[in-house]
Image (cartoon, rainbow, N blue to C red; front, side, top):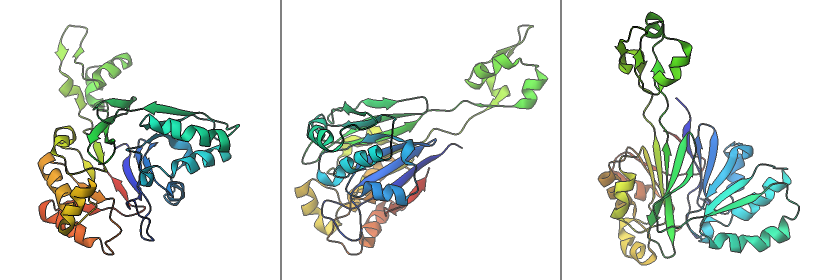
Length: 304
């Protein structure tokens, strides 16, 4: 099976601590790296995760709070120092380009590669990236400023040829691609051989949803229904639900309730408030509703 991994680089919230880095993740799909948020320290964590800088070509920013984007300028600069030549594509609110332009002009003159900005509308659900293996869509969220999450959906792969059946029917090589993609085979005598006799199904395509920062918002459920992995912020414990509501964040138990209603396969909670010395309280609360919950931690790698 092709690789589909989620690497947690940082899972803290706005206030820096010695326990956590700011929000950042890297999704590895078939050896193509996609960064989701780029908080302070992201490039250091990228090295610690032993992920290849050269395979990171796309960065998605959920919103313009500093703990989700303060690491971006340093990463761009480092790529320049390393002699990067491939374009770097950044998908973010239109204001980010205006904010970064003077810094790029001042710090990155003569840079060997191009930074390409793709403005997104966080209020819309739309495909913002698409290639042969994956599509990425926005998930509108509700926070103190415009915010969106991201849904990564793997494209289906072709069926697997049953070699013995191909030999039995003496199927020419030029017909194999069509058969892999689901077509029946018609023999020279006009006999139709159903595709299910000639192939076995490929593995089901996988999906990953990233939802941070946001209040508990049931409107996202139809879009994330049945995903293989959901990352949902669980900033606060239930005893601090009033604070979560005030700051437009979610409790761990509320994140678990979203996971239950969306029928996801696995939940990871993160974006922890600095007030909790021991985040196991958040995990326990989430697991009372959704047992298959993980607690995010730096350098955690989850394979789908």
